[in-house]
Structure formats: C-alpha cells, structure tokens
Amino acid sequence: MRKLVGSDRVFYYTLLPFGSIVLAVFILLLGVLAWKSVPILVREGASFFTKNVWKPSETSPSMEEYGILAPLLDTLYTSLIALVLATPASLLLALLTAEYAPIRLRGVLENIVDLMAGVPTVVYGLWGAFVVAPMLREYVMKPLHEHLGFLPLFSCEPISGQSVLTAGVVLAVMITPFMTGVIREAYSMIPFSLREALASIGATRLEMIRVLLSMMKPAIMAAGLLGLGRAAGETIAVSLTIGNSFSLSPCMLRPGYTISSLIANQFPNAGFYYYMTSALYASGLTLLLMGVLLNLAGLKLMWSWRERIHG
Amino acid sequence: MASLHRRLLLDRVFTLVVLVASFIVLAPMIHLLATVAVMGGRTLLEAGFSFLYKLPPSPESASLGGIGPALLGSMILMVLSSLLGLPLAFFTAALAVEFPGSRLSRLVSGLCRALTGIPTILVGVLVYTLVVVPMGRFSALAGALALAIVMLPYSYTYMETALSSVPKSYREAAYSLGLTRMRALIHVFAGIARRGLLAGVLVGLAKACGETAPLLFTIGGLRHSLFTGITGPIDAVPLLAYSFAMTPYEVYHKVAWGACLVLLLIYLLIFVAARMIVGRVRM
Image (cartoon, rainbow over all chains, first blue to last red; front, side, top):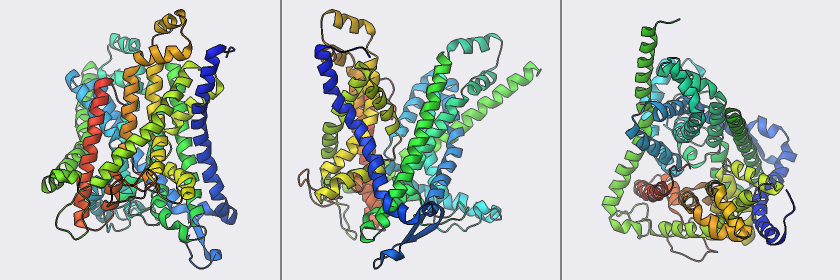
C-alpha cells in the first residue's frame, strides 16, 4: 500500500482500533477457551475425546472423570442427518426458484426462503419439541423400529420423541433455507452465455440443469460445508429436541447429546465441581475448531469456484 | 443418442418431480409458521393485549400473565447491543473498503466472514468468562456485549457490500473536489450507500432480538422485575421461551408459544422493513 499522507493517515489510524477489536475478539475467544481447557486436557490428555464418561464429584477432585466421545459423535451424527436431508431439499428449492417457478411466484418463494433462514432458533426449538417430536415418534420412529429394527440404525425402542433423528430433522429444516440461498446465488453467477449456448444446441431444460449443476459441484459442496458448520454449532433447537442424555449406540431413535447442548445444560452447575468447567471449555474449544474449520473450508471453496467461473 | 421423444419425456417427468418434491420441502416451513401462529395466537387471544406488559404467571396459576419484563428486556438489549455493535461494524467495513491494501483490513474482513460460523453459545461462554465472572453478576451489559459480537459479522457484511458498491465515478468526483477520505466517506459515500447501511442495521437488530444462546450465561433471566440498570440482570423474550419450554408446566408452555409468536412478529417486521429497503435479505 502506498504511503498515506496527512489526514488520510490520521483517518487510517482512527479506523485501526475498530479492526483491532474484531481481531481481539477472535483471539480472545480462542485464547480463553484454550486457557481454560488446560486443566482437563493435562489431566486426561487425548482420552478426553475417546471415552464416554461424565463423572463429577462433590467431594474429591481425583474421582472426577470426563470424556466427550458421546456428545462429539452425536454432534456429527445429527449434523450428518441434517446434511443428508437438507442437500437435496435445498437443491430442489434452488432449482424451483431459479428455473421452474413462474415469474410471479419467484419473488414470493424467494422471500419465504430468505425469511425462514433468519427465524429465531427458539421458535424452531419449540416447534420441534412440541409438534415434530410427537409426530415423528408416531409416524416415523415407531414404524421404523417395528419393521426395520434389525438394522443397528433403528434397533432401539423409541420411548420419547426427542432423539437424534428428531434433532437432525429439525436441523435440516433450519439449514435448508440457508443452503438454498447459497446455491441459488451460485446458480445465478454462471454466465448467461452458457445457458444460451445450451439452448442453442437444443438441450431440454433437464439437460441444461444437469450441465449447470455439474459445473456447480464445488459450490454445492461449499454450501454443504457451510450448512454442516451451522448445524454443528446450533444449540437451542437441538437442546429442545435431542433429549440431552449420554449415549453411544448407533441407533438414531434414541436421545443423545451434542457438544453445544451439553454446554448449555451443564455449564450453569459446573461450578460446583472441580474439573467440569474445564471439561466444558475443552468441549467448547473442540466445537469452535470444528465450526471455524468447516466455515473456512466452505468459504474458501466458494471463493475459488467464483474465481474460476469469472476467470 | 436418445430419441427426442424420450428426452422430452424425461424433462416432463423431472419437472413433475421437482414440483412435488419442492412442495414436500416447503411443507415443514409453512407448517412451522402456521403452528406458531395457531398456538401463539391461542395464547394471545386468551391473555389479550396485556400479554405484552404483564408479569409471567406462576406454574399453577389460572391466568396466563404476560411477558412484560422479557419484552422490555429484549428492547433494552437491542438498543444496547446496537450501540456497541453497529458502529463497530460500520467502521470495520469502512476500514475494509477505504484501505483494502492494508494487511489488517484484509485479515479482519476474512475474519468477519469466518465469525458468522462461530457457534453462538461460545460467544456467551466468552463473555461469561471475561465480563460476568469479574463483575460478579449477570448483567444486561454482558448480554449486550455478547449480542454485539454475534451481530457484528452480519451487519459488517451488509455494510461492506453497501460501501463497496458506491460507483467509482462518485469516488473520483469526491476526490477531485479535494475531499479527504474521511470527509468523502461521511458526507458522500455513506449517503449513497445508505440503503445497504440501513439493511445492515436492521439485520443486526434482527439478530439481537432473536438470538438465545449468547444470553444463556450472561443476562441471568430476571423473570419478574422490570429494568434494574444495565449492570443488573435482565430477561429477554427468546430466553423466556426457551426456559419455559423446558419446564413441565402447561401454563408455561402456553406462555412460551405466545412469546414465540411475539418474537416471530417482531422478526417479521424487521425482515419486511429490510426487504423494502434492499432487494434481498440474507441472514
């Protein structure tokens, strides 16, 4: 950057503190979580991530033991269920609004999808807990267990509607509008000349879409990564629909725990015990790294694809 | 080479699949809006307009009471967090747009984009560790700080887009008149970009009123008293809805639905306002 002079320089130095605050917040977040995780990580090392145990003790710190294997796996489990459901859903919605809907409906549809992307998560949570959970239990989980119970995925009996599956479904509904927006934006970025070319050689709409979608594969992957990141970090809606209990079985009809709902539920009383706060900070650090990595990967993928399209 | 007839048939079938499947995909979203409207509507009809200013009920009470303290708390938090977060977003966006060559500005603009993916509960944990514990109490200030951090990346994105879409011709004209960068920004560019900037403000407000996780460990959920000062605990509508939903009491569930409807209406208002100002609103 060439040298600034006079009042431009003063202006730059006035703006710097604001930028530094943003940087400071990020560094503080990483630093505080890491610093507070040290006690439990020093005590348990890598086994903190590989065992499923949650043993607080009010009398003796040496009896405490914590391991977040179950919440860690369940976070991935629910996010993957959400991704598997949301990817085709968002592709369909993006195609609907970009290609198939009549022009007059397009605005309405775009608005509904954009609106749903920002609806407060507690609303999704209440809907999930009071409406979706009972419905899924009666019409999806019980039949799945009855007829496909030999599969390890459905081998446990669904007692309450709150389960890994319910949380995954609610998360899917939550991240679909967001992913639809990303895919739709990417779709509109493909130069029009390509569509003209496809039309000029007589492609049907389906064939044109197939070509365009295959061009968009990195963007779709990026949308998937970003959606996965969002799903993994979601707290409130998950806490109300997942049942909040430690469990390691591969069955998806059972209640579970994600890292974020673990923190939400256990943090208030963690102060009574010796190592629990540190354990929760460590799981928070894990969640942060997951979220940031997924987000960065998604954004990077999106950026490089954009460069290629316009280059 | 497939026959033309077959290709056209596949095209028709796919169109049908897309229409039917989209209906299935849109159904849960419409269902959610309808459910909140019906369940929340029942509560609001039963409780009447006083739902907006009365105190919450006790678990066994017959009347529904209201969400007065929480609503007031949400408004106060919206104002406080905007005061903290919006200027920060604006000046950071100004830094990124006016001085794009600087290493810090590029780093910060990348960071802001990454910050949208941070789980919001961790922001709450951070503010708890750095503000609530040293202060020794829950406070509206801590909640506002947490909300400001959460809203920052979203407002920043809108404001940065707005400022960077100011056409080059205006920049050249402003500089040719002898305006310094700062004057040009304040007197010329901000005015031209006012729509996007306003959208950034509204998106920030929407985040501030709707987020729950940053408030879990910062504001303390003071359910039955009105404002006790910004260094005192306070309640918020989403927090109230969340806490009440986790209880086993029927009355509390009804109040939670009512709170959700109020929240949804506030969000709808902000969304429609933002939509009228800018073409698309991306949360």
